[in-house]
Image (tube, rainbow, N blue to C red; front, side):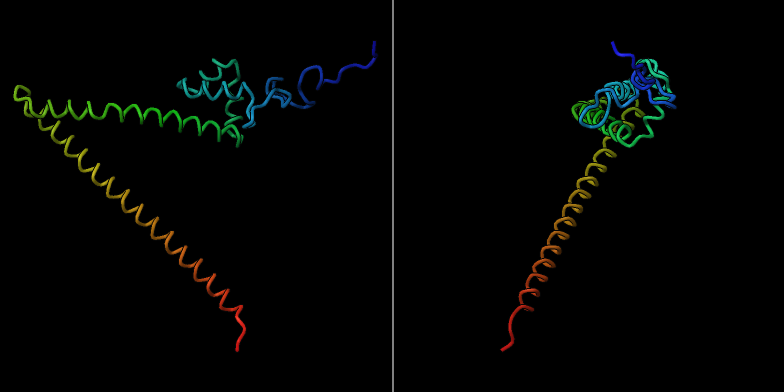
Amino acid sequence: MSDEQPTDELATGEKPGDDGPPDESPTHTQRADGLTHKQEAAIIALLNEPTVQRAAKVCGLNDRTIYRWLDEPAFSRAYRKARREAFAQAIAASQRYAPVAVQTLAKIMTDATLSVASRVSAATALLKFSRESIELDDLATRVDDLEKSMKDEQAQREAGSAAGASWGNRACA
């Protein structure tokens, strides 16, 4: 039996002077993105709960821990990525229901038994949606054209500098 006593760090998982609980120490298994399993759970809770306090409670953490993690680059980057992914899923769902929404507006607009205000509102919404769709499509076309133009200019510059370099290497007769 050894008469060596474990250091505070080994016994508690904390480093001397560390005020955080052991679950936040780097001794916990980290994923490839640098997050611990508790941090991953905190991100999931932040996405599902309305407040940081509720997310912390669900994870069994202090809310100050989550606020501190939000200031860490790896955690905040992973949280932003998770939020973007969740938002992308919501957008995809709204796009699946867009045809139904348009059909509903068209039914309201053409239903003579409904009030004039309801039909005008539906017609206005459809016209606005149509105009915005055309503007968005035009904008996408313009961006594509600009990107192609920039690539063409870059290719011409590179070809020009390659031609200039080979011209400069020729011997004068």
